[in-house]
Length: 437
Image (cartoon, helix red, strand yellow):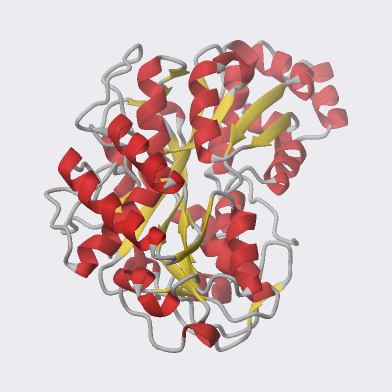
């Protein structure tokens, strides 16, 4: 990567030198500044001690990336230790081992389960420098003022709490956020166009008997149930009042359809991790399945045809963000805010966009992407040059067009979000029965 993070505006502490300025300076520069007497008070303490700070972050493998930890060390001076787990393990650890982490990198549906437990602290909006540039879907639930709010656990419904000490989600934006949004996408089915044998246009195609033994579904209940609902609704078999908050009857109908399909041999596997989905698709064992955008890219990188297929019923969306553990205080808490502000300042956003995800602050990410990259990933235009991965490998040849088109085309057609329902315990139990059937 030759792309480097552009300097951001200073925070302006009392001495007129920002923490970020100190963090980005070398030890020699910091020492000279301290020695000159130009810096006094807290900034000096920060400069002297930040290199000793270690923040422990955990979350799913989607965004717990070694490249981010390396860049944090380079730009901010402290150490970020990352642990990647599957979604269920993330949820459990967040609640049952709150002293084992400092930063929680979690999805909003997980936040709905975790934040009411009181293990995380609300974050001050006024400390988030690019708050006013965050994509509005995280603030109001609408991509544009005329957009409909999608069903499911939309991020804005669990994005704010009522006050500094509250664990109750607010119905409108407040000065206190649960998570600072970082990453999101509009998900659909991945297919092997060389093997499916016909055009794929609907979620119901997942259960087409023509693909018997060659289909796969994501085995994370709060996500998989939404894929299943998209399938059943597209088939005309279930009419939901709100598929993001199903009744017990709707859950039963949905999972009976999926169980019957499973018993008929429709599914080759149920996957939980990125690597599993890549291996299933690249081997040809599966030719249509729930999938994530970078997994599609990983299959393509092997020289194998794979498409993230736009479907007429729309997309299932998800979003994640960074939260701070309740126990964090002092210098470590300041470092956590600095890290979160850095995360939204552009370098990481561009890195995520190049993986096929979307960044929460588009303006800053754009500054770290070439015009050709931005046109391909965000505007849906044919690539004017080869499109490279964050690691510099060719992902798409010149002339290729992103599956699903532009940012507005994809995020503007979100039908639902991953969801935690009122009947969540019942749903999870019935889902596990389906998997075990």
